[in-house]
Length: 170
Image (cartoon, rainbow, N blue to C red):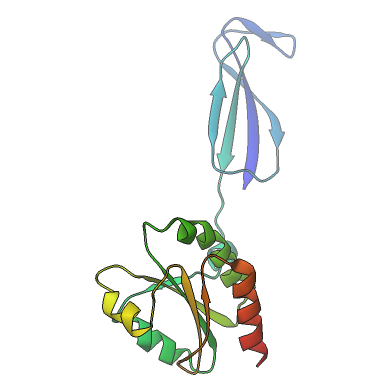
């Protein structure tokens, strides 16, 4: 990503001691990271901020949390083999689920040897949620060899990290 700041002088003004008629642009600064934004502010001197976003294969290859459903959950868990699998059971309306979601995503980027899944416990997935014994959301189930070995209920990130570490080291 690159940040470019341009100066656009208003009509009939001076830019670098030269009279300007019409709009003039001068590049003032290039560099740094920035979120994608466009900002314009008009005073005697207009300033615009332009930002370009360069997506590379490296940044696009970041680990992601896979969304699963009743039909895809068990095949993915079985395909993981002896890898540790962590499943976030959540609902769309759950406040604590929304709070912990970004932290859960960060964990998926930190632990490359662990499979991270999300299961929306809506009406469509209710039979699977019942089969897994979900009574509270968020609930995190940690599986090894297709068997549930640990469970963390509530949005307790430290407890989840401890549980993941203990299963990985076992």
